[in-house]
Length: 230
Image (cartoon, rainbow, N blue to C red):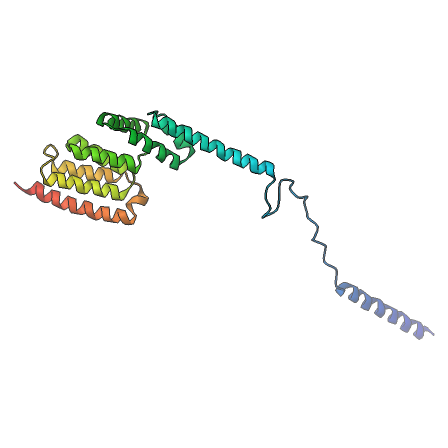
């Protein structure tokens, strides 16, 4: 009788043990992750959805306002108002260049051009290609010590290696033709080298910058030979 009880008790323990193992390895259902963790942003309209009309209207209104401001600045530049340069520079480089080009076009005399050049230099404002080319054209009319220095300086301020290279070549042509008698070979070389470092590192290391370096090396050698002549 006792043996039967012991056997039944052992059998019951075995069943409980197997049931526990089965429960442990029974596959559990994955948690439902379909529901969002946070409520959707009320200003979110979907990745490709269009914004409501009121938002589109605000964007159009902002664009129209910027265009009106740009138009006003350009009109003021056409009237000779140089103060627009600082205002245009705050908005964008493209608008600044356009406003400066308008002022360059209006500078139809040597006095007006020199005044504009002085204004930019005093206010440390950027120089664009149009102004640099205008200064070079002015210099070509009457090359001397002072105008050569200004032409090289503004060519360098334009941060255009091709323009600076052309200016160096033009200065060498004037030197060969004897049109720069008040500028020694050493002084001309110092101008070339000094203004070169105004160019940005990116411009100096560009393809046009490589051509410029070769032009400067050639100019240095030629100036050294000219300096050595009795």
